Length: 331
Image (cartoon, rainbow, N blue to C red; front, side, top):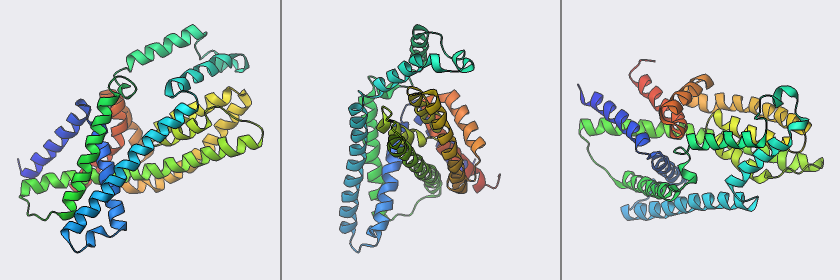
């Protein structure tokens, strides 16, 4: 077995352990900070500064700015959710209330597919929460522990960007092979996350136009409009399935006003996602040469194996796997 094969095995084992040891938030946060620092540093031409100390100081300042902005963004989103109605729990409760109160206006084929009373709906939701309690740890007692992992991951990402900016060394072949795997995975993350962020931003913008501009102009003001825009962006970072989740929330909230508005919202969302499919093929597909069915298959398999963390990691893991296979000429 060559050093390259050993590096592949260690990379596969590391990615497996990231999911089993629940270190995915730290890994993703670290990669995000690392790439944001490199992006800003390249725009500011920090890499071309003459002195080593000047580079170190510049990267430290940029690192502090990036981490501060990311933490502030999370705090701001949580504050918005609470301001609109008490947070995620209140939002989910409102969706359940809308479904229950809208039953008389629903067509029979939709009505028959839903739980028949509020107690049945509550029982279903309670069972779902019990089944996925481990996957919802960010909303439970382990939130502080996970947040600490995220902060540590951010610091490690900042340290790596600083090290890469100033370090010059000659690596042994095995170390170089490991570094190649790390760089390839990092590039897969950048291609997927940054491209998907562009698509999510476009979706969130058009959702805001619809919920915050178009509907108020015709005299309709839906509750949780700001929350729905935030949900659209955050869920949109997960290809395909994220859109299904955010679209379902928008249609349910629209159903609280009328069945006709729910159908109008559904028509709007279908139209927007026709545009998104074009953007997905143009942005994400051009980066990793992957079709929607490929990503969806990978996400379903990873979700079955690792739950919610597997679902989040699947696009990046699949992009990395595909890049490795292309590198050896298999595909």
